[in-house]
Length: 126
Image (cartoon, rainbow, N blue to C red; front, top):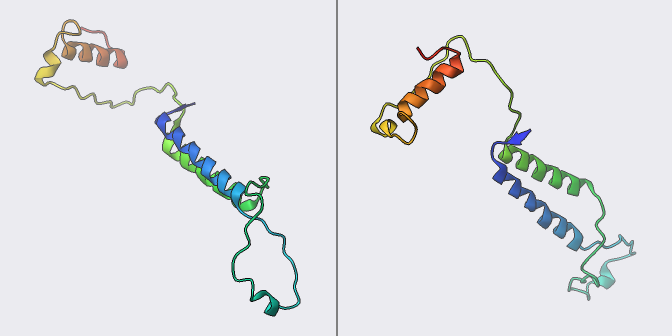
């Protein structure tokens, strides 16, 4: 298997910020209190003592990483090249402009394209 657009694999780096956000997300244990009346004096949010937490697996993390993996696969366009026969009615379009008269391929580019088309069809170059 190959990729039609291998540069799309760079999008896999989007998984890094997702992992970092899940590591830095504060996790506070739920605590039952009898009343919130006494908590009104504490108006400021409580910060976490250690910002780097152990990465715990969660459904949200798995869903986000799966979304990144699907995005990477869609952009990279995986393909499986296979040998295929030409159809019964195959059309070759050859460029007949002046640039095809260049002699960097002998005798000319146009003649080389005609030869390649005949070879693909399996016809002798008569």
